[in-house]
Image (cartoon, rainbow, N blue to C red; front, side):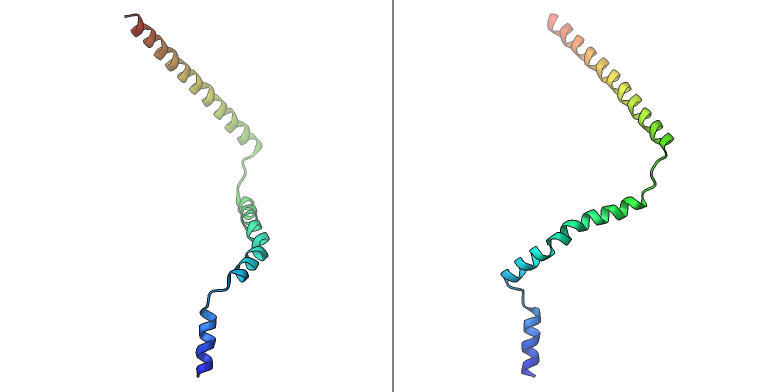
Length: 89
């Protein structure tokens, strides 16, 4: 009966610092590789766009960038002209 209590206490004890350090370095390669392995499995599930879709999406993004560049340029030009007009008053 007394032996069972001692065994139960030892099972619940926290491992020593040295043991934890050894376990950390022993498991380090697996812990570093795990996210990459998970990422690889997730990338296999991805439905990739076709070449035609990819070109269309790319052209759409480039057109949007050009449009926003023009809009921001016009707003900047208008704001600078407004500041020049206010300074001359």
